[in-house]
Length: 369
Image 1 (tube, one colour):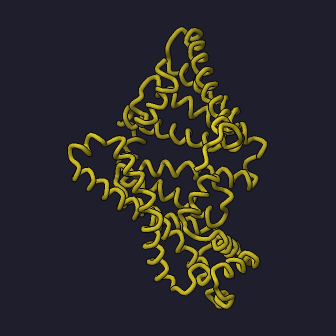
Image 2 (cartoon, helix red, strand yellow; image 1 turned 180 degrees about the vertical axis):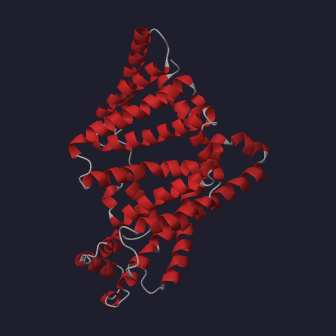
Image 3 (cartoon, rainbow, N blue to C red; image 1 turned 45 degrees about the vertical axis):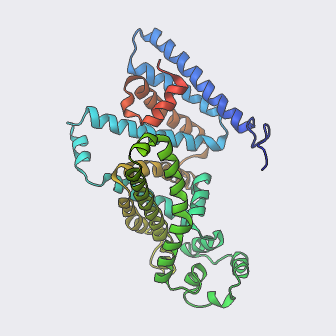
Protein backbone atom coordinates (compact mmCIF):
# COMPACT_ATOMS: atom_id res chain seq x y z
CA UNK A 1 0.00 0.00 0.00
CA UNK A 2 1.34 3.40 -0.94
CA UNK A 3 1.87 5.78 1.97
CA UNK A 4 0.22 9.20 1.71
CA UNK A 5 2.68 11.92 0.77
CA UNK A 6 3.22 14.87 3.07
CA UNK A 7 3.58 17.47 0.35
CA UNK A 8 2.22 17.88 -3.18
CA UNK A 9 -1.23 18.61 -4.61
CA UNK A 10 -2.82 15.61 -2.85
CA UNK A 11 -0.56 15.55 0.19
CA UNK A 12 -1.43 16.23 3.79
CA UNK A 13 0.37 19.57 3.49
CA UNK A 14 -0.72 20.22 -0.08
CA UNK A 15 -2.01 23.56 -1.31
CA UNK A 16 -5.70 22.69 -0.85
CA UNK A 17 -5.17 21.44 2.72
CA UNK A 18 -3.14 24.51 3.68
CA UNK A 19 -5.71 26.83 2.11
CA UNK A 20 -8.56 25.20 4.03
CA UNK A 21 -6.59 25.36 7.28
CA UNK A 22 -5.84 29.02 6.59
CA UNK A 23 -9.50 29.69 5.83
CA UNK A 24 -10.76 28.16 9.11
CA UNK A 25 -8.06 29.92 11.13
CA UNK A 26 -8.66 33.27 9.45
CA UNK A 27 -12.43 32.94 9.81
CA UNK A 28 -12.13 32.18 13.53
CA UNK A 29 -9.74 35.08 14.13
CA UNK A 30 -11.78 37.65 12.18
CA UNK A 31 -15.03 36.50 13.76
CA UNK A 32 -13.78 36.79 17.33
CA UNK A 33 -12.10 40.15 16.68
CA UNK A 34 -15.17 41.55 14.91
CA UNK A 35 -17.52 40.29 17.62
CA UNK A 36 -15.41 41.84 20.37
CA UNK A 37 -15.13 45.14 18.49
CA UNK A 38 -18.86 45.34 17.74
CA UNK A 39 -19.76 44.56 21.36
CA UNK A 40 -17.60 47.46 22.52
CA UNK A 41 -18.89 49.75 19.79
CA UNK A 42 -22.59 49.00 20.37
CA UNK A 43 -22.20 48.73 24.16
CA UNK A 44 -24.45 45.68 24.18
CA UNK A 45 -24.39 41.99 23.35
CA UNK A 46 -27.06 42.04 20.64
CA UNK A 47 -28.15 39.82 17.76
CA UNK A 48 -26.87 42.46 15.34
CA UNK A 49 -23.27 42.18 16.54
CA UNK A 50 -23.27 38.40 16.08
CA UNK A 51 -24.77 38.56 12.61
CA UNK A 52 -22.39 41.30 11.45
CA UNK A 53 -19.35 39.49 12.88
CA UNK A 54 -20.31 36.33 10.99
CA UNK A 55 -20.88 38.34 7.81
CA UNK A 56 -17.53 40.13 8.07
CA UNK A 57 -15.62 36.91 8.80
CA UNK A 58 -17.25 35.24 5.79
CA UNK A 59 -14.99 37.23 3.47
CA UNK A 60 -12.23 34.80 4.42
CA UNK A 61 -13.84 32.39 1.92
CA UNK A 62 -11.72 34.13 -0.74
CA UNK A 63 -8.75 32.20 0.66
CA UNK A 64 -10.24 28.94 -0.64
CA UNK A 65 -9.66 27.74 -4.23
CA UNK A 66 -12.14 29.31 -6.62
CA UNK A 67 -13.77 25.97 -7.44
CA UNK A 68 -14.57 25.32 -3.77
CA UNK A 69 -16.18 28.66 -2.95
CA UNK A 70 -19.58 28.14 -4.57
CA UNK A 71 -20.19 24.64 -3.10
CA UNK A 72 -19.34 25.70 0.46
CA UNK A 73 -21.33 28.94 0.15
CA UNK A 74 -24.44 27.15 -1.13
CA UNK A 75 -24.09 24.36 1.46
CA UNK A 76 -23.92 26.86 4.33
CA UNK A 77 -26.80 28.85 2.79
CA UNK A 78 -28.99 25.74 2.88
CA UNK A 79 -27.97 25.20 6.52
CA UNK A 80 -28.90 28.79 7.28
CA UNK A 81 -32.31 28.37 5.65
CA UNK A 82 -32.98 25.41 7.92
CA UNK A 83 -32.00 27.47 10.98
CA UNK A 84 -34.42 30.22 9.93
CA UNK A 85 -37.29 27.80 9.28
CA UNK A 86 -36.82 25.92 12.55
CA UNK A 87 -36.44 29.16 14.49
CA UNK A 88 -39.62 30.58 12.95
CA UNK A 89 -41.52 27.36 13.60
CA UNK A 90 -40.46 27.38 17.26
CA UNK A 91 -40.82 31.06 18.17
CA UNK A 92 -43.53 32.24 15.76
CA UNK A 93 -45.76 29.20 15.43
CA UNK A 94 -48.91 31.28 15.84
CA UNK A 95 -48.16 33.50 12.83
CA UNK A 96 -50.21 32.79 9.68
CA UNK A 97 -47.38 31.71 7.30
CA UNK A 98 -45.97 29.28 9.88
CA UNK A 99 -49.41 27.82 10.62
CA UNK A 100 -49.99 27.28 6.90
CA UNK A 101 -46.62 25.54 6.44
CA UNK A 102 -47.17 23.30 9.45
CA UNK A 103 -50.56 22.24 8.11
CA UNK A 104 -49.16 21.20 4.73
CA UNK A 105 -48.59 17.45 4.69
CA UNK A 106 -45.53 16.01 2.95
CA UNK A 107 -43.87 19.39 2.53
CA UNK A 108 -40.53 17.56 2.67
CA UNK A 109 -41.67 15.29 -0.18
CA UNK A 110 -42.63 18.33 -2.25
CA UNK A 111 -39.23 19.91 -1.68
CA UNK A 112 -37.47 16.66 -2.56
CA UNK A 113 -39.56 16.33 -5.74
CA UNK A 114 -38.44 19.80 -6.78
CA UNK A 115 -34.77 18.91 -6.22
CA UNK A 116 -35.16 15.59 -8.06
CA UNK A 117 -36.66 17.32 -11.10
CA UNK A 118 -33.81 19.83 -11.30
CA UNK A 119 -30.94 17.43 -10.52
CA UNK A 120 -31.97 14.54 -12.79
CA UNK A 121 -33.00 16.77 -15.71
CA UNK A 122 -29.63 18.54 -15.42
CA UNK A 123 -27.92 15.15 -15.30
CA UNK A 124 -29.61 14.02 -18.52
CA UNK A 125 -29.75 17.35 -20.39
CA UNK A 126 -26.83 19.48 -19.15
CA UNK A 127 -24.54 17.62 -16.72
CA UNK A 128 -22.03 20.50 -16.74
CA UNK A 129 -24.53 22.48 -14.62
CA UNK A 130 -24.04 20.18 -11.62
CA UNK A 131 -21.16 20.39 -9.11
CA UNK A 132 -18.32 18.09 -10.20
CA UNK A 133 -18.30 16.07 -6.98
CA UNK A 134 -22.04 15.45 -7.09
CA UNK A 135 -21.91 14.67 -10.82
CA UNK A 136 -19.24 12.03 -10.15
CA UNK A 137 -21.52 10.43 -7.55
CA UNK A 138 -24.43 10.40 -10.00
CA UNK A 139 -22.31 8.70 -12.66
CA UNK A 140 -21.36 6.03 -10.11
CA UNK A 141 -24.90 5.62 -8.80
CA UNK A 142 -26.43 5.64 -12.28
CA UNK A 143 -24.42 2.57 -13.31
CA UNK A 144 -24.53 3.57 -16.97
CA UNK A 145 -21.70 4.30 -19.35
CA UNK A 146 -21.19 8.08 -19.89
CA UNK A 147 -21.27 7.43 -23.64
CA UNK A 148 -24.82 6.10 -23.31
CA UNK A 149 -25.81 9.16 -21.28
CA UNK A 150 -24.25 11.48 -23.86
CA UNK A 151 -26.42 9.81 -26.51
CA UNK A 152 -29.49 10.50 -24.36
CA UNK A 153 -28.36 14.14 -24.05
CA UNK A 154 -28.10 14.44 -27.83
CA UNK A 155 -31.52 12.81 -28.31
CA UNK A 156 -33.16 15.26 -25.88
CA UNK A 157 -31.73 18.22 -27.79
CA UNK A 158 -32.60 16.74 -31.19
CA UNK A 159 -28.95 16.35 -32.17
CA UNK A 160 -27.22 13.39 -33.85
CA UNK A 161 -25.17 11.07 -31.70
CA UNK A 162 -21.41 11.26 -31.54
CA UNK A 163 -20.67 8.34 -33.86
CA UNK A 164 -17.14 7.92 -32.49
CA UNK A 165 -18.41 7.48 -28.93
CA UNK A 166 -21.24 5.16 -29.92
CA UNK A 167 -18.99 3.01 -32.11
CA UNK A 168 -16.41 2.68 -29.34
CA UNK A 169 -19.15 1.66 -26.88
CA UNK A 170 -20.51 -0.99 -29.25
CA UNK A 171 -17.03 -2.33 -29.97
CA UNK A 172 -16.09 -2.44 -26.29
CA UNK A 173 -19.23 -4.41 -25.38
CA UNK A 174 -19.09 -6.65 -28.49
CA UNK A 175 -22.44 -5.40 -29.81
CA UNK A 176 -23.34 -5.38 -33.52
CA UNK A 177 -23.87 -2.01 -35.16
CA UNK A 178 -27.23 -3.25 -36.44
CA UNK A 179 -28.88 -2.79 -33.01
CA UNK A 180 -28.92 0.99 -33.46
CA UNK A 181 -30.29 0.94 -36.99
CA UNK A 182 -33.91 0.25 -36.07
CA UNK A 183 -36.67 2.59 -34.87
CA UNK A 184 -35.89 1.83 -31.20
CA UNK A 185 -32.17 2.57 -31.56
CA UNK A 186 -31.96 4.59 -28.33
CA UNK A 187 -33.49 1.82 -26.24
CA UNK A 188 -31.28 -0.82 -27.85
CA UNK A 189 -28.21 1.26 -27.11
CA UNK A 190 -29.31 1.78 -23.51
CA UNK A 191 -30.47 -1.76 -22.75
CA UNK A 192 -29.43 -4.07 -25.62
CA UNK A 193 -31.37 -7.30 -25.85
CA UNK A 194 -34.02 -6.26 -23.31
CA UNK A 195 -37.46 -4.70 -23.47
CA UNK A 196 -38.06 -1.49 -21.53
CA UNK A 197 -40.06 -3.19 -18.75
CA UNK A 198 -37.59 -6.04 -18.43
CA UNK A 199 -34.71 -3.56 -18.24
CA UNK A 200 -36.45 -1.57 -15.50
CA UNK A 201 -36.83 -4.65 -13.27
CA UNK A 202 -33.32 -5.91 -14.06
CA UNK A 203 -31.78 -2.49 -13.44
CA UNK A 204 -33.55 -2.07 -10.08
CA UNK A 205 -32.48 -5.54 -8.89
CA UNK A 206 -28.87 -5.14 -9.99
CA UNK A 207 -28.68 -1.66 -8.52
CA UNK A 208 -29.90 -2.92 -5.15
CA UNK A 209 -27.30 -5.69 -4.94
CA UNK A 210 -24.36 -4.00 -6.67
CA UNK A 211 -24.61 -0.43 -5.39
CA UNK A 212 -27.29 0.56 -2.87
CA UNK A 213 -26.78 -2.18 -0.29
CA UNK A 214 -23.00 -1.84 -0.58
CA UNK A 215 -23.36 1.91 -0.13
CA UNK A 216 -25.71 2.01 2.86
CA UNK A 217 -24.63 -1.09 4.83
CA UNK A 218 -21.14 0.19 5.81
CA UNK A 219 -22.56 3.63 6.61
CA UNK A 220 -25.17 2.20 8.97
CA UNK A 221 -22.71 -0.17 10.63
CA UNK A 222 -20.22 2.63 11.33
CA UNK A 223 -23.01 4.97 12.48
CA UNK A 224 -24.37 2.32 14.88
CA UNK A 225 -20.93 1.59 16.34
CA UNK A 226 -20.20 5.29 16.89
CA UNK A 227 -23.53 6.72 18.00
CA UNK A 228 -25.52 3.70 19.29
CA UNK A 229 -22.82 1.54 20.82
CA UNK A 230 -24.45 1.46 24.26
CA UNK A 231 -27.83 0.53 22.79
CA UNK A 232 -26.15 -2.22 20.75
CA UNK A 233 -24.70 -3.71 23.94
CA UNK A 234 -27.99 -3.56 25.84
CA UNK A 235 -30.36 -4.61 23.04
CA UNK A 236 -28.26 -6.25 20.31
CA UNK A 237 -31.10 -8.06 18.50
CA UNK A 238 -33.41 -5.06 18.47
CA UNK A 239 -30.64 -2.69 17.37
CA UNK A 240 -29.44 -4.95 14.56
CA UNK A 241 -33.03 -5.46 13.35
CA UNK A 242 -33.63 -1.72 13.32
CA UNK A 243 -30.39 -1.18 11.41
CA UNK A 244 -31.29 -3.88 8.85
CA UNK A 245 -34.67 -2.25 8.23
CA UNK A 246 -33.02 1.14 7.82
CA UNK A 247 -30.49 -0.25 5.32
CA UNK A 248 -33.20 -1.99 3.29
CA UNK A 249 -35.45 1.09 3.18
CA UNK A 250 -32.61 3.39 2.15
CA UNK A 251 -31.34 0.93 -0.48
CA UNK A 252 -34.83 0.56 -1.99
CA UNK A 253 -35.19 4.34 -2.05
CA UNK A 254 -31.88 4.95 -3.84
CA UNK A 255 -32.39 2.14 -6.37
CA UNK A 256 -35.92 3.26 -7.18
CA UNK A 257 -34.71 6.86 -7.44
CA UNK A 258 -32.11 5.84 -10.03
CA UNK A 259 -34.38 3.37 -11.86
CA UNK A 260 -37.17 5.94 -12.31
CA UNK A 261 -34.62 8.45 -13.60
CA UNK A 262 -32.97 6.01 -16.02
CA UNK A 263 -36.27 4.75 -17.45
CA UNK A 264 -36.99 8.32 -18.57
CA UNK A 265 -34.74 7.74 -21.58
CA UNK A 266 -37.22 5.15 -22.93
CA UNK A 267 -39.90 7.85 -22.91
CA UNK A 268 -37.51 10.47 -24.30
CA UNK A 269 -36.58 8.20 -27.22
CA UNK A 270 -40.24 8.10 -28.25
CA UNK A 271 -40.40 11.89 -28.39
CA UNK A 272 -42.81 12.14 -25.45
CA UNK A 273 -40.59 14.41 -23.35
CA UNK A 274 -38.75 17.64 -24.12
CA UNK A 275 -36.19 19.62 -22.09
CA UNK A 276 -39.11 21.73 -20.84
CA UNK A 277 -41.35 18.86 -19.69
CA UNK A 278 -38.58 16.50 -18.47
CA UNK A 279 -38.16 18.19 -15.04
CA UNK A 280 -41.90 17.93 -14.35
CA UNK A 281 -41.96 14.24 -15.28
CA UNK A 282 -38.91 13.46 -13.14
CA UNK A 283 -40.27 15.41 -10.17
CA UNK A 284 -43.57 13.51 -10.34
CA UNK A 285 -42.04 10.03 -10.73
CA UNK A 286 -38.90 10.30 -8.58
CA UNK A 287 -39.99 12.64 -5.78
CA UNK A 288 -42.42 10.21 -4.09
CA UNK A 289 -39.64 7.60 -3.72
CA UNK A 290 -38.53 9.48 -0.61
CA UNK A 291 -41.64 8.11 1.15
CA UNK A 292 -39.72 4.82 1.43
CA UNK A 293 -37.38 6.55 3.88
CA UNK A 294 -38.30 7.09 7.51
CA UNK A 295 -40.04 10.40 8.16
CA UNK A 296 -37.17 11.66 10.31
CA UNK A 297 -34.76 11.42 7.35
CA UNK A 298 -36.91 12.97 4.63
CA UNK A 299 -36.29 16.64 5.38
CA UNK A 300 -32.56 16.03 5.83
CA UNK A 301 -32.38 14.31 2.41
CA UNK A 302 -34.37 17.11 0.79
CA UNK A 303 -32.10 19.77 2.30
CA UNK A 304 -29.01 17.82 1.24
CA UNK A 305 -30.27 17.69 -2.37
CA UNK A 306 -31.22 21.38 -2.26
CA UNK A 307 -27.55 22.40 -2.32
CA UNK A 308 -26.66 20.89 -5.75
CA UNK A 309 -30.09 22.00 -6.97
CA UNK A 310 -29.33 25.66 -6.21
CA UNK A 311 -25.88 25.31 -7.77
CA UNK A 312 -27.39 23.85 -10.94
CA UNK A 313 -29.98 26.66 -11.15
CA UNK A 314 -27.30 29.29 -10.60
CA UNK A 315 -25.08 27.74 -13.30
CA UNK A 316 -28.05 27.68 -15.67
CA UNK A 317 -28.80 31.36 -15.00
CA UNK A 318 -25.15 32.31 -15.47
CA UNK A 319 -24.71 30.36 -18.71
CA UNK A 320 -28.03 31.70 -20.03
CA UNK A 321 -26.85 35.27 -19.52
CA UNK A 322 -29.36 36.13 -16.80
CA UNK A 323 -26.54 36.45 -14.27
CA UNK A 324 -23.36 38.31 -15.19
CA UNK A 325 -20.29 36.14 -14.85
CA UNK A 326 -18.32 39.10 -13.53
CA UNK A 327 -20.66 39.26 -10.52
CA UNK A 328 -20.15 35.62 -9.52
CA UNK A 329 -17.55 36.36 -6.81
CA UNK A 330 -19.76 39.09 -5.33
CA UNK A 331 -22.70 36.69 -5.20
CA UNK A 332 -20.60 34.03 -3.46
CA UNK A 333 -19.47 36.45 -0.75
CA UNK A 334 -23.00 37.77 -0.17
CA UNK A 335 -24.45 34.26 -0.02
CA UNK A 336 -21.77 32.99 2.34
CA UNK A 337 -21.96 36.16 4.41
CA UNK A 338 -25.71 35.85 4.91
CA UNK A 339 -25.35 32.16 5.76
CA UNK A 340 -22.57 32.61 8.30
CA UNK A 341 -24.24 35.65 9.87
CA UNK A 342 -27.39 33.61 10.41
CA UNK A 343 -25.56 30.52 11.66
CA UNK A 344 -23.32 32.50 14.05
CA UNK A 345 -26.37 34.23 15.51
CA UNK A 346 -27.95 30.85 16.22
CA UNK A 347 -24.64 29.51 17.56
CA UNK A 348 -24.27 32.34 20.07
CA UNK A 349 -27.92 32.82 21.08
CA UNK A 350 -29.88 29.57 20.63
CA UNK A 351 -28.02 26.47 19.50
CA UNK A 352 -31.19 24.39 19.63
CA UNK A 353 -31.84 25.53 16.04
CA UNK A 354 -28.65 23.79 14.91
CA UNK A 355 -28.25 20.08 14.32
CA UNK A 356 -26.24 18.38 17.12
CA UNK A 357 -23.31 17.34 14.89
CA UNK A 358 -23.07 20.76 13.26
CA UNK A 359 -23.38 22.45 16.65
CA UNK A 360 -20.46 20.39 18.02
CA UNK A 361 -18.28 21.36 15.03
CA UNK A 362 -18.93 25.04 15.72
CA UNK A 363 -18.19 24.58 19.43
CA UNK A 364 -14.86 22.93 18.65
CA UNK A 365 -13.96 25.59 16.07
CA UNK A 366 -15.17 28.76 17.76
CA UNK A 367 -16.08 27.91 21.32
CA UNK A 368 -18.78 29.95 23.05
CA UNK A 369 -18.03 33.66 22.95
